[in-house]
Image (tube, rainbow over all chains, first blue to last red; front, side, top):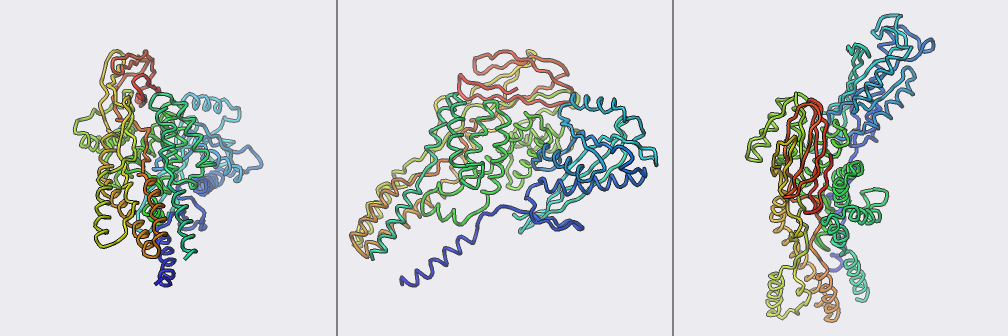
Length: 203
Length: 409
């Protein structure tokens, strides 16, 4: 009897502990075309922002440089002024985190500069806009005309939205990041690109 | 035989050492907070938190959520909104982890006591966590993230078929100010059906000032002995004695269950706000007293059943030991007597919540306005507020004690 109990007890203990155990949630990037990254956090974080902003900035800059035929070495780089980051998901995303990631992406790309303002304060944004407009380099058409753009300043808006599909085994979360470039003076929309990131999140 | 005895003694010493209770932590800060000594209360809790959760790694402690929520609310009441929002953020991360079911925790709760399981709080408390986080973000002018957290609260409560009228109303106001009137209207109607009274709609052209009063203090839990349990267990021993089974004295302590108590100064106080002389009484939007009572009432059968099962497991071990050796059975019985006396109910709760949350709304033209507050019969000093067209402003009032009111403009 004792032997049977000693044999069965470890088995029961292992089964009980294996039934339901807590684990740290992770996510996998399953976006078609993206390399599979298994170290993503379950919530929208620095890695996700880095993946999406790298692709978006590359798309926008590639388009701009192709249309304007400018070369990076011969003139100053275009500046993108981020006036607002709209979080339309259901998760807290630190705006300081987005700013750090954007600056890192700009440095790695090397073809543009970034200025991020905390547009919570309208007065601060007005001062920033006035400073940019008074910049002697700003006297150009920031519209995409061939061979005529010189060191433009774009006003940019970043919007992040989320859609979620729940299944019994995991959640599929789609994050759509849209970057829109505006003419800094007329606020007219110049160009827009979006990126969809699909993650499979463990429950 | 000696090896089994030694193993049992080691096992019991482990069980006795595991019988710790966060009730002593609660005593350290709660009375200070409810008597208006907020800074002292925060210092006390931070000292304990530093020992239990070093480096803010919530995995170190199953009571992480309890620490973060109580600390965050006290910091919010003091006006330290930045620290409060950080602690609410940690609380949400910890909740995400500890909400997962754990068989090991269930087994520990059954064998040792109810405090062995991780604290995560009922659904209404987790919704309020998100609401308070959103309020702190709003105070820090992080409107985007505040909106995201309110949306998260709405989705979370939909998932569990729960409705919090305050979350819905706040989110509806946000959406209305953005121009999303159709979704705002749906949320307004849902909030109205929860409250049972009509609610005013806002206007895009006017500034909206929302006055949220965190009124009074919620009841706290304490461990209460159930006299009927001792009687029932004695009757069980009497029944067993008729079949010539040896009696166990470990039934004497009985079982303990959680009960609610409230500080005499913790009642909600009638609050009136007036802007430019136009006065409005704040109406109760959510009663935490009622929610706590209902939750305890619903959970009590399970708590009692688990306590009884725990007692029966220990009693079976005593019986098995008595069958082998009378002396060993007596030692085990004594050990279980001490164990049962030390086994307390789970008294962890978000004890820094208010008794109820009251709300009033004013729609104003752009410009400067005077704001007055009347708590009971006491008139507080007039303050000036400057509002802009189409914006939303939230004023948080904490009525912690009849003589202590914090106003976070």
